Length: 257
Image 1 (tube, rainbow, N blue to C red):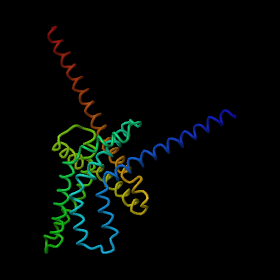
Image 2 (image 1 turned 135 degrees about the horizontal axis):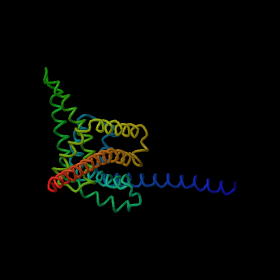
Image 3 (image 1 turned 120 degrees about the vertical axis):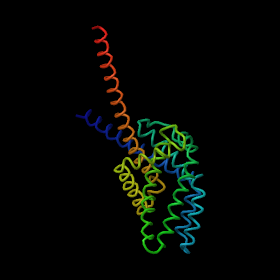
């Protein structure tokens, strides 16, 4: 009886240790993400808390954020996704800082492209929302484009850390995954929007968990797609091999006759 209690305590303490270990991992990567994105978050913070907040101030801040984000938050987010990828595929014991830095250097150009796309969407939305007549309805088109861009960007981060592709291939595949898997895209939108909402309500989540939770959920969703595609490809290759073997067998029978 006493020995069973000791084993049960060890199991309980082992579970507590695993939980605290994962909390530390999530916190470490989230803090690194914020540190490497300090210019972005600093500008965002002083804009939000400014007592003289206005539409003009918001526009000026958005312009500055658009300039600094390809050099700060985009590389930092790619780095965070590279760590999340390691965790999802089962490589839990990875050097967090080194893996983060290696991922940091990958997505500068991708960040510039997405910033330009968001700028195009915003400018057109702003133009058509103030238009008269039926042209005003076109602002809904650009709202839709903006919504689609969000999961596309998340899939881009996942593709960047999982494949060695050129930028054009990464962008094309990110769009294809987003459009071709609409339910997965909706899942990404709602879950990540939920994380952002909870982080806005409980602001202590922002410096400790917000980014890493979004990265883990996003890469997990992408990796499910990857595994399904891989299984389908293996089945197709197996069927093609069986068909080839059957054809060779038939040809061998004919040659014997």
